[in-house]
Length: 322
Image (cartoon, rainbow, N blue to C red; front, side, top):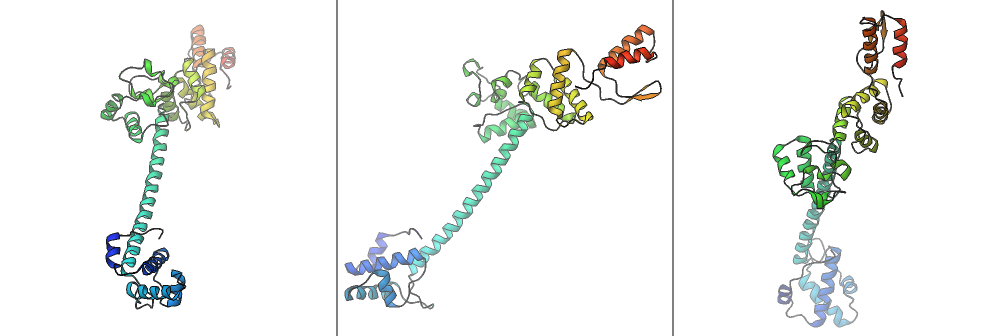
């Protein structure tokens, strides 16, 4: 034990008739008892060493104190009933403190894991909370945007969240900030109505439904694509095309391809079932190829690719995979 409780009233009552030397001997023996958390040896010679007794008077004081306050027990050691009780109490408190520390560490671990999970699920719908958001506010955000509890959603939107906003000018924000003010300025500008995900978040949801497992609504290329006018539906169609083609990075490929096609005015390639041309199986027809097909059919008054020259021209016009 590094410390013990000393009750002055009890001590003075029990040691009223001790001399100054005997007080010293008693304190030295008692300090050793607590420090080692074990009874004292029965042999006087060992007690002299513990108390530092050199003169005959010192040794006599040690013997008197030892016999009175540290009697020999059945185990052949000198015991002090009060010291034994305090040592037992200290042990119980130490065990309780260890359990408390262990429980607190486990609670903090579970809280960190839950916090990381809620951050990840909110990012999937385009909501990026500030790193300093409290756990209670993070739970409300998660409930409002992921589990869609309308009561909590209302409570979140009525609360002032501006202190957690990253990159938003609070001087220009409304007196009734929306829950999506948790996101940065570039994301806040793309938010729809209260409780709705950003266009980036909606694009990620659609792309995940199309089979693209890894998405990131904060990806700069995705933001750029949305700003350029690429719709979430176009990105989802292109992601489905990437999955069908077996692309190793379907998310990045879909964004790059969709932006390129949008700039050129092209449409995503269809991932529908194979088609039949002159009795032969051909790849799925893209929307661009469909438009050219309809144009050529109108010219010749037919509904199929009846003219080989038309087939060649349409096949050459079909956009190749970037």
